[in-house]
Image 1 (cartoon, helix red, strand yellow):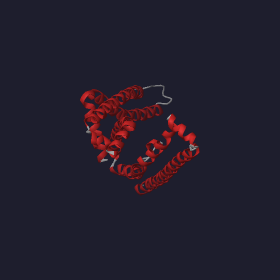
Image 2 (cartoon, one colour; image 1 turned 60 degrees about the vertical axis):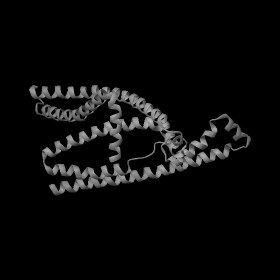
Image 3 (cartoon, helix red, strand yellow; image 1 turned 180 degrees about the vertical axis):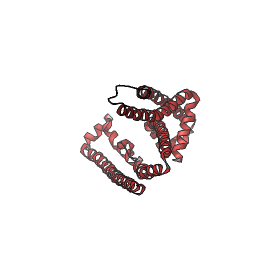
Image 4 (cartoon, helix red, strand yellow; image 1 turned 180 degrees about the horizontal axis):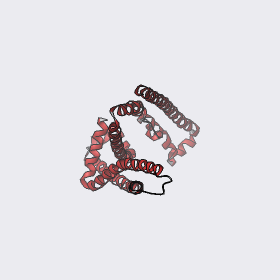
Length: 273
């Protein structure tokens, strides 16, 4: 969490130098998108209550009209703000890639020749060139959603706490197991290019033999096509098996946390009753 916070601050400082207005607009949008669902839910509840209470009376009443207007405005606002959010996030992605590309080029130019010849530094530079921009873009975008989720939790906790400390305690205790499992087992690799550095490097080294004509010619002359294909298959199968184990572990932990949460909720309701 500390490292995530440091990386987020670094990106914010980098972007704020020339794109402060974009960051401020996005932050404001995420605040509104975290708040409006509660207004929407509250107005929906009042609307349903008023409709049931006034069913068959033939009258509307000011409260029903007001609840309807608020609900429609909140629903329309969510659509409008979500559209603006998508647009601004795309702009953020473009600007993040631009800033990181310039920062990477600037850093490469400042480094001495010995650093460029160092294998570890060279490997790091290659990884940054291959994946740095889009990874940073996704990371930065996720931090805004993380910020929105934190706001939603805070607002939801305040609403629940307003009904009493017991209800708040029930919600906190019942959601804790699933949150802990998600934090510990929620990560994973999307494909072979997100695997461990050793696996990714080995896969790239063998795979490139099929993407350069002189090496393809060499493979055919020495009849090594089948051998290299088998190596690539073994790497892919090994990666899939490892990720399958991780996904199975994540599923089992998630199911266990869900069962524990439901059991805690049932027990606490019985105790409270």
